[in-house]
Image (tube, rainbow, N blue to C red; front, side):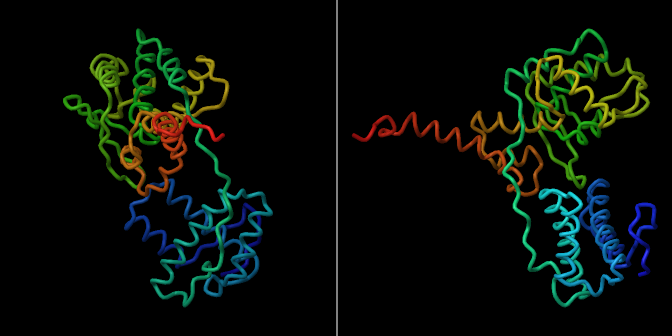
Length: 310
């Protein structure tokens, strides 16, 4: 590998090991384009660092890897991004060990940076109701927006899942939505009757007025599929109209969906399935809600909760 400098305009370094690994995770794991791009960026960052030091990937050791992570932190990479970066590298190292490219894992001794415990931002039930009540359903755009917002909250969708929905992904007979999540993994999500009524009305009466040029469920003025940016702008506009002062995004509806289910008594495993989390640890960020509910139940019903020591 030749030294190419550290400017952004320099040709990006590549390596056959990295190319083979990216091909592996694309085919075997079925990752989305966004996930694959993140892995590629992280590994390219490592190659660029090694290239500037004239160190070959084959000669990478824990000391050099530590220098790389120190360099990233010095450039301003925060703990959460640094942990994600290290996770990408560890995936590559596991594959490299399986391929017998390395005798030892270069990242074995490195610890993940400590992450701050940040609870997800979510809307109150009143805030959700105010936002959902704002679109003017007498217009085609207002009806589309109402159906879109209803689904974000009723099914806990990611914005990428929302804009990827096709008309046939909704079964009005049973009120089930077929959702394709990360890595094209399919899950079936039931939606409540109010969301079913709104969605059915949108599909039957409103969507044809957009003169569809694509089979996506939600369309823009030109009859084409909505973009992520378009959904973000709509959510932001309705939140401001509803008087929500803090910044929210489409993902806030997903957090609200999970939070309100747990507040209502749903168990964590059910919420995991509905959200499409591959690992329940990703769902456990919502356990503060469940813990608070259990504490309230304990205080209300335990026979000694109301007693005070004398």
